Image (cartoon, rainbow, N blue to C red):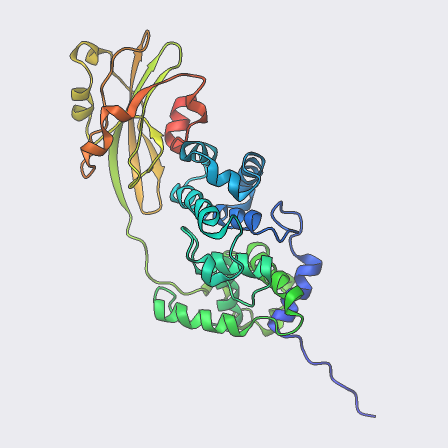
Length: 364
């Protein structure tokens, strides 16, 4: 009697089975179909490592256990809790999205990716992640981890710097979704393909011997998985010199101002920023200029720019009438008036949303 051959599992079937046995199951935002928790984690995980997100996620869920709680919060508190996580536009959009969920959707997250994308800060992949993980919508995600897994598996050599080629990869990704028992398989598949990219199919030195689809993976067969994904366009980096006025009293009160709602460190509380030492000096009363002390210059790396920050210390015995505000080329001076600046007590400024380098400077 001829032997019956068992067909090889599809990519999706292999990923689902692998996730069940070997995927991540201990992350605090897993094992739930609560769209609020999943959405919160997805926003935090954009360009941020899991190890960093864990503590922030726990603090946000403790302070804002529901989307209504987050929507009702003041932006300053949201940014304060987010402080140190970086990419603050995520926090501002997240806050606005929570308010839209409450105002436009009765406090209930939309159940499909198309409507989720209408919320601030939710792009195609994030919307698909929430819709597939929480509501089993058969929709593909395409974050950095998934792009790497799929391009290697497929041997996709097209340049993803081209939107046309990325659109093609989206179409292929959609065709590779689970076809059976979608209600159960879809959330596990989405989690599985993310887990595969995060733990096995890593950017450097991928562990191909642990991969459930190694036998069909074109990049593994070629012996060159690190060549994928192909993306030739490089970000042009620039640099900028900025001077920070660190005015502080012996009691720890700090002179801070809130940044405009656009631009670098938008909406955060910050030391006054200047584009030259002379501009900083001119903003300080003449009687106090001889007390200015230069600190060591340090570098802060942004996505497209390196900032070289020059802290200038001014220690006062007590808070005095002080009007120094920022003066930076390209910044609308009217949006950074003295009305937005004030002395903030030592017990209060640590809870504010501060740029990471400013917090480091103040606490160091």
